Length: 441
Image (cartoon, rainbow, N blue to C red; front, side, top):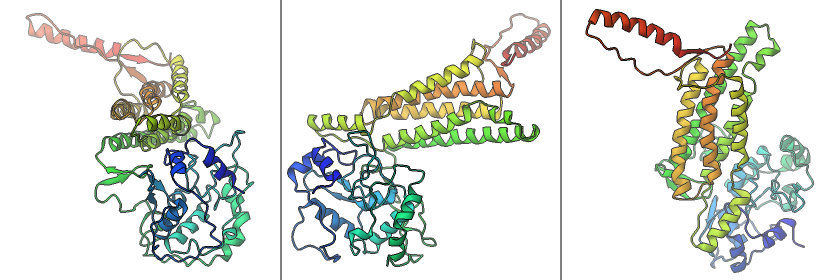
C-alpha cells in the first residue's frame, strides 16, 4: 500500500521550490521506494548506470552528498542529508523530506506527518544523530523500524522535541553510532575542529561563491546576493534599535521602581520590530529561492508553485500601514521636512530607513528584470521605510523629545556689514526658535 506522501506526490502538479517539475520527472522516471530492510549497507560503486531516483538518492547519501542532479531534467535535488542539516520541514513538499511533510497541510487543512518520516521536524538532537550516521557511513546499517515512528504526533513546534524525545529515547540509547571525534569536523552540522556542535563555517564559500536554497551556486557579488546581503544588513540595524529601546525601558523601570507603565514606554513598537525582523528573514528566504524557468510551460508551472509555496503575502504591507496610521494619530501634523535627530533610538531609526531604501533599490532588478522575486516583497520593503520614518518620530514623541524641522537658508540684503551681522544673529536666533517643535503638548 502506498503511503500518504507517495499518493500526494503522484497526484500533485508540483511539489515545492526544489522540485518544481517533479510531475515531469514522474512521467519520465520510475520512482519506487527502496526497502532499507532488504538492502545491504555496502558503499561500493554500482556496476551499471543508475536510473531509479531512489537508487540515485541512496548513492548520493552513501557518497555524503547534499545534492544530486536528476538525470531526467538536469535539476539539482536536495538529499536527506541537506534536509536533516536544516533541522525541520520547510513545508515545500520536497522529494526526499525525512520529516514526512509534517509542515504541509493535507486537503482538509490539517498537518499530518507521513508514515515514511524518519524523524520529527524540529528535533535537533535526533536530526544531528542522523547527519552523523550519514557522514560516518552507517545511515543504512539500521533497520527502518528503529529510526522512529513519528505518525500521529501533535503538530506543535514548541513541544515537538519533548514529545519526540519521549517516543524515541529507547532507540537513541540503543544506537551504536560511533562517538564524534573532535578534529574530524568539516564545518556546519558536522562540527568544527574543537567541537562536535553545529558551527557557522563550512569553507565552501572560500572561493567567492555561495549556494542558494535551490542548490544553485553563484558568485558572491551577484545582484541576488547584493539584495540578500542588504536585507540582512537592514535586519541587523533594526535589531540595534530594538536593543536600544529595551535598554531605555530598563532604565525607566529602574527609576520608576519597576513600574508596569515602563514596559509601555514605546507602546507596541518593540514587539512590532520583532515582527519586522522575522518578515525580513522571510524576504531574504524569498530572494534566496529564485524560480528558474526555461520555457512557457515551466514558467506557468513555476508561477503556480510560487503562488502556493514561495509567495510573500500582500497583507504584511497592509499591517505596516495600520501601524503607521496608529502612530501618526498620536503625533502633531507634519508640515515640514524634519532633521534626523532626537533620541539615539530615533536617530538610529533614520539610519534604518536609509538602509531600507537601499535594500529596496537592490531588490528592484530581481522583480523587474530577473522576475524571480514576488512584487509583494518589494512593496513590503517600500512600505517599511515609511514605517521607520514614522517610528523615528514616534520614539521622540514617547521620550518627550523635540522635533527639529528643516528651514531654508535666510539670505540678508544690505550694504552695512555691521547691520547685516546684527540682523544675521537675530535671524539665526529666531530660526532656531521656530524650527524646534514640541511633539507633546
